[in-house]
Length: 482
Image 1 (tube, one colour):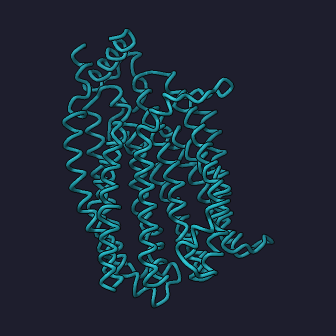
Image 2 (tube, rainbow, N blue to C red; image 1 turned 120 degrees about the vertical axis):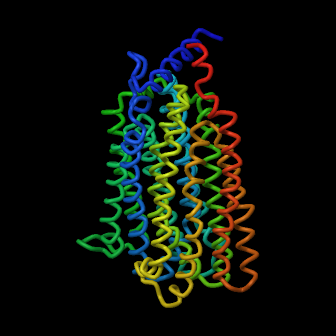
Image 3 (cartoon, rainbow, N blue to C red; image 1 turned 180 degrees about the vertical axis):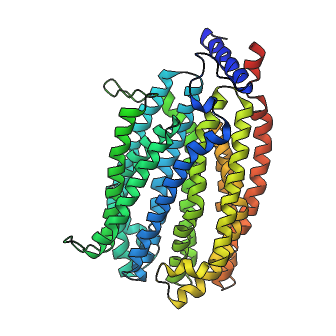
């Protein structure tokens, strides 16, 4: 064992012993993620993220509400853009998850050099990701829409919307990266401010740019896209300022920066499973759109509306996860098994509670949710049973989401990937296709609770393995040395 490894183990042993006794070791641990009482720590880190995620959900809904005021084809066009937008989110958040896990673990190990390297390489990867979607916006938007529909009005609306969103996505990638840097060091309050600002700007400028209010030009669907990217760019600028001014745990210096293959590999070892996992969601959405549009474009619009409305349920859980992941990663690096298990348990309780509330709302008020989008009678006929059936999957989703994030925080994102592949590609899409052969669109929606049941079974299997191989052994070497 090298001297550096011995030093880290000795530090981690002192950290684990002190944390177990409720003390803070002198000059060993100063970060709140290793010392603060767990429920207070989780809430202090997660609540700002949950609030900001709720604001994000609000602006996603408002965006579609205003677009639906143009006509149903405009709403369908925006809904059909979702797979590409999901890919952007997948790449940005997946890379961010990798940066978050590596950076937080390095903080727990008190390795400042790797903390800085993780941050700098994360920013570099964000810029490269933007270049990819700049090309997508220029070359892929029209063929993407033509592969789904031949309705020229939908194609025209969609190409306009998607081109703007992709070409101007530098704001989204930059915002996401610098927010993850704040999250990974426990400064989630600042990410709430940046995300909320971006969302509020979007909400304000949506009607102004769509309908041409206060002297602005009437831009229609293009206005919705412009409001979105404008909000992202402003939020990105503020996130950069916060990191430079208040994030003292990270020291960014790009004057001598060179991309580091080893660090990028560490980031993507965690991030790629997350990217693929979310990208699979894009494939699933694209496949479902192809299945549903065979019935009617209204069914596709209902599916798009579902994704907008369900974000009010899922976004708080994702915010909870964003608060949990750095805590798990930090205490894993610090060798404190008790705190790793405690935060996971608390997160499951909160996530399942949120999902149960969402289930009740979807069961009792599906017509009211659809009415926000100027739903026609035909849309209500398809949409009410759709929301009630799909929401049954909420019963298991909260648990699976939290445990999947625990896998990622412990550097085993491949487990989350396996669950996602099994759920969305091996079960959900095939089930949806087979059920569509009955000729009844309402049967297609049952593929969601069927897939979630399978997801629960696989998640429990992988959790038993990771608990035996990793969680139960956290801190053993440090404790032996101490």
